[in-house]
Length: 232
Image (cartoon, rainbow, N blue to C red; front, side, top):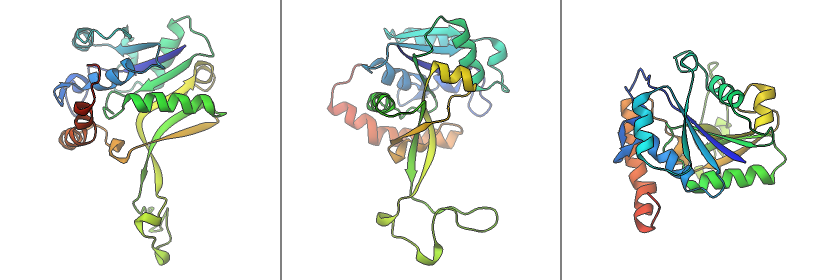
């Protein structure tokens, strides 16, 4: 079984009730749930929340695959880790160690069904125990000792000849349930990287992020959606 898991909380210091704040005409969490709902590879989606308001909004979507999981308050405060609520959920359910656990972050609304399906297919094709999504950034990075990290400044490459560097975008992680239980972590020992488009790098943590992300969403995803009928 392929189980998708979307943890969301009431609390957000930067943007109150961020996960249900309207983003491109829909509550933010809608977009990641839509990508999962439309995936042929996802059997069930659990949205883990401590918030009655979020629960009511999510239930109003009437997505057939989505179920709400009431996370424990101890795993919903500012000090709680994502892994803590993952392990709480796994411990509360009779699920197989061989099941795939797909963690999706609601604050990365650029995730599309093609990324969900593509990452699961890649995971199954490769000899790995976990997978994460990254974007390729073609920028030059330096460390605190004033040394270049990813290029030779004496032989500065042209952008088209530069491989860049992979940056975690926080959108999606896949592991076998047994790996999560063993490592107490979303990632294991043999990790695969699924590369997503560069515009998906943005995460919604501040108000300015919101404005930029809406523009990117309109340009790269919603215009394409309007050209092709997608279940909403």
